[in-house]
Length: 560
Ligand SMILES: CCCCCCCCCCCCCCCCCCCCC/C=C/C(=O)SCCNC(=O)CCNC(=O)[C@H](O)C(C)(C)COP(=O)(O)OP(=O)(O)OC[C@H]1O[C@@H](n2cnc3c(N)ncnc32)[C@H](O)[C@@H]1OP(=O)(O)O
Ligand SMILES: Cc1cc2nc3c(=O)[nH]c(=O)nc-3n(C[C@H](O)[C@H](O)[C@H](O)COP(=O)(O)OP(=O)(O)OC[C@H]3O[C@@H](n4cnc5c(N)ncnc54)[C@H](O)[C@@H]3O)c2cc1C
Image (cartoon, rainbow, N blue to C red; front, side):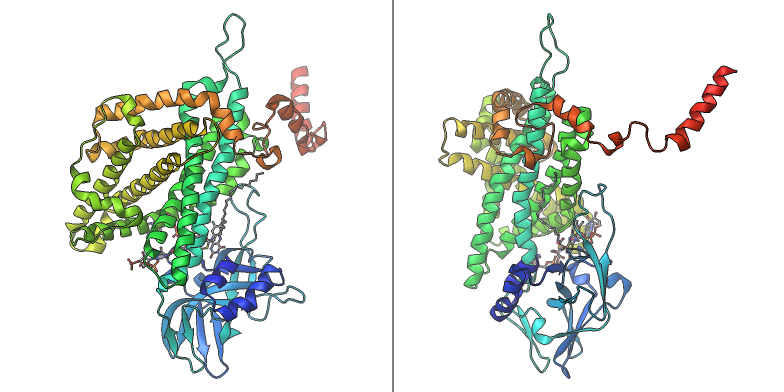
């Protein structure tokens, strides 16, 4: 994040100076934005950067305990420098949050520079899983930096202390977060596909019940309940991969437009990165835990690979923007778009479907049989109608409040659900678009088509209440979708293992005795147990101190 911050917010001169140092690890940087008192509310940050025209320097200061920087990854032990976000004050005026490059530690002996207090914030969730990352605390006591270490692409402070705003939107200050959010979506698919690969392979090996005439028991993968829990997660791993690829394209496109001062897609990039980051990370965190349960007792062992994956993954729901806060950003943009519909302004990009408001508010889903749900046009329209109607309902309810802000506050739980519906529509749309493309490999397209339908119909089934409450579907059509879903699971089953093998993960990368490619699960579990440090001694360390006295007492009593 240190590098993208300098790339996005630094002038060419600043990039030339700092980036080569960072690339060669001659300096190590971190992204110091969040404070003890404020993370989500960036405008509420308290650290100050006051310009001193006498010396041509900024004075970086932490005025309160709550202004201590808190969480930056790499800050605790490793970083020599940070991009610090602070309130810029010049000529007695507060100009809000800006980025500054600040050296924290000596390049000679790594000791903190004068006026800098820093350290690690302590152990984190999951007994050690994420503790290889040194998340830090940082305080400044009037630390001076040269004026040219303010990141000056978006705005400048002159030698005399005049504040000059460039003609670029100030939201570009948040560009680093947009960049990382889009990469987190692709990473969600990676984490989810790891968990699903372990659970599918193990479910093909694990057998319980169902033996007839002394024959083999049933592979748990053949149980309909196992399939209905696992295959939607498999489909989600593919769905997030495709939407992640698309988001990466969108981000690249926006960046190219920004270079020629075209800011028209900035809002679209913000809404899509924020919303997709929120929906995919929440779904992935839940899915990793579901995969643990799908692997029964053995899933709870560290050697299954799932506990560590979960512990490392769950903070993705919080870092780079708390998921609820991000979805409310999407909701704000949805409400803005709905309010502009009456003025004739045509929504664009992923909001374009809202332009069909007349049709979608009244349309009746034409599905009559379970097979009808295999028609992507029906799926697409059902998701569009649900998302639009939820957004319009929210807008109408907000409109009845005494003022917009109050209405937004009161309706925020509904707004959250409307935002999720809009984002799920994007994921479904991008999956449908993907399977319409030429896909090489015999039968591959057909498998992806199945997964696309599983993702869409499972999402529909899970959120059926939304579809019914908005009148987008009838209860009968909801039931038909569920019927079709069951048939799709049966079609996915024969290829389930191949569909996870296709992720092409090595055993080393998976780090799971349950997810081994060769399926030799039981010998591996048995062998792994003997690696437990507790098994280094036959008689445990505390035996003489704690167990023996108890056992001896029992022995005495029994002899009486
Ligand atoms: C063996 C087993 C091993 C196991 C290994 C397992 C491995 C598993 C693999 C998984 C690995 C995971 C991989 C992860 C990779 C990625 C690494 C991530 C590292 C994480 C590091 C974390 C870093 C951080 O967290 S940095 C800090 C992030 N902080 C935030 O996100 C703060 C959130 N808050 C905000 O963004 C803002 O405060 C906001 C947007 C909520 C409100 O801002 P505001 O200024 O108050 O603005 P507002 O009034 O709401 O809006 C004004 C205006 O601006 C528009 N807007 C807002 N934001 C943006 C934007 N970003 N871009 C463009 N426009 C924006 C908004 O829409 C408004 O517009 P208008 O209405 O038109 O005015
Ligand atoms: C592992 C990890 C790594 C991190 N790395 C970095 C880093 O490198 N650099 C950095 O600067 N930061 C980093 N962070 C900090 C991270 O960005 C913040 O923790 C995150 O943005 C959430 O902010 P918060 O902690 O202030 O949560 P809060 O905003 O305090 O959230 C608490 C609760 O309040 C709710 N809430 C907050 N505001 C609203 C609202 N307006 N409406 C409704 N509900 C609301 C949230 O949904 C949540 O339930 C990291 C955090 C973690 C966990």
